Image (cartoon, rainbow, N blue to C red; front, side, top):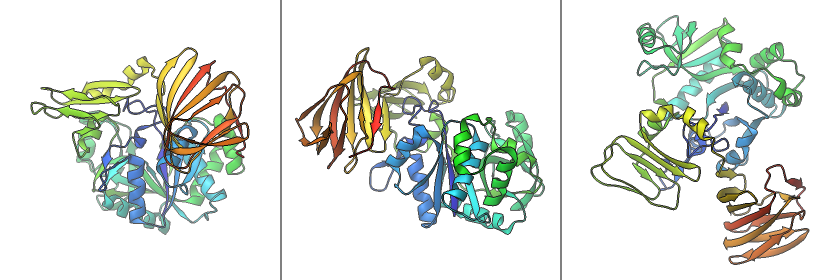
Length: 436
């Protein structure tokens, strides 16, 4: 299978564990058989590999998420990087051009597009194989997966099929309705539009050239910021006369809010947390090195991270976004391709950060013109490179880097250090160099 996973999201509906860099699909909440935790993107990537070990997986995502993807997934996963957010049609057009021009897929190859974050089981991936087969026959230019509704949802668009068969031509599409209208659609045999579909690569490439002015993948990437924001549904799907839908009645759930996400957690608490036996329906996720105690409360979500603390009725947690907009929180934690960092303290002219590097990884060689830095090694071993001079480092060592000096740190084992910056703290005060 050739699968494009759409990885977007602003990171606000699952605040404080998510942010602009760490969207919901990167939060590790699902317990593995080994006892650790995996994220939505790790879970779906693992499930794809279990269903088809030879699958070509490409993740279409913004450049702010690339480091987290590299951190959590295999280095060989394909990434179609969106320079900025331009909705799903430009994203899918760019990913399709990437597959054609970079991965060298032929125009008759079938491509499956799906979100990166559905909560599904193996039946979903077996259905993707059937979707691929239907698209390969060429009886329709697009083949959609229609999800059998389990309740009259107001969150999804609806697909109205012509017949009640497993596959059918599409009669029409309906926008997100109110609950009463959704009930009527379901009685008429409507299906949820979960954003899952398949096509031959040449079809979408042709549509992209009809609607966008570009020569190839690199040209489209260069022009991406000038493109109009438009959804794939509006630009292509709703205008396509040769379109089929395939019914899917297996497990499928959109974990877009704390309320739905906590329903799939295998345990009520993650992290340092305790609740007494008078609590009912309480979920606690704590990423802080401080304990959380709940007593005598019901139907709550408590989420704590360096970004902040949420205490909410589970149903009310669905309405979090406008309040997070008012808080305007900054990014306090992020995963990078080399590890992660957590901001411990922030003042006008100083910044204190806890940095963890994964074994065998290194930061970019870089400099800052207006701030000094000091690294204090807490644990692990590695090598610090400052203005071309390398030294081995281990717990207790201190490395000083005056403003203007070129520096990087590399980890031999997992390496944890405290970085203190003093001077003019500005995200743009960074210059990168080729590693030596």
